[in-house]
Length: 213
Image (tube, rainbow, N blue to C red; front, side, top):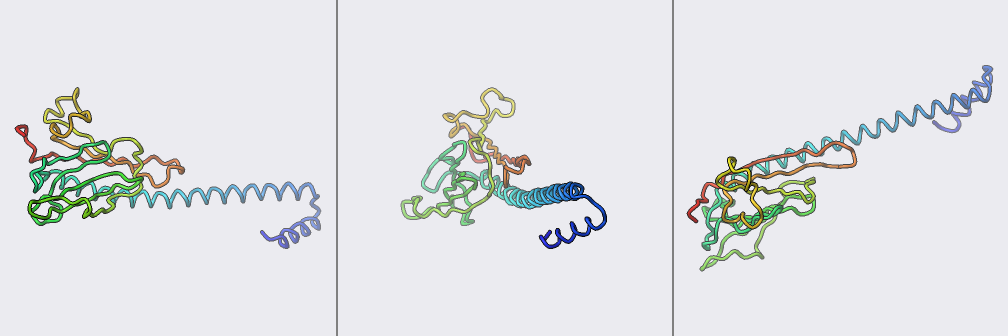
């Protein structure tokens, strides 16, 4: 409300017999109502925008998880003879699987970088075959990931789910013993709004890993 408009309203109220105190009280109450309505609208708009962002991030992440499970199921020996799984950390996983569609096993690295879940791919090359780290191609799979220090990858042996004592596997037992992997990511666009993060999960059986390795 402009200054001139307020002055006109006050002048009109005085002419109608309202006292200065009544006008001040009425003006104060009107200001409180206006500020309250504006604050509610502003918070609601922010929650709506954040909600849309969270939904979009969740849909992108869900598609990425489905693609990841397809890759994990087909994990196999590297073209250089490397074991199908090269690294099995809480927030980083390296396997060999064909993601480029050329029927050759690529070195595939999934890792958390800040609030982004990324995939790095190194294609085999040369004779003898090598995987050159300088040729790694990195893409973003999901944004708004709020796992913090919580694991993204959980590893289970062949006795899962009957064996609940030794699963999920401890860090030192994962590479050779893992037969099933679970992925868990939490998506949250803006934690200040108060809405809980969206928890997404997916799992994959490592079909080509056998107990006789």
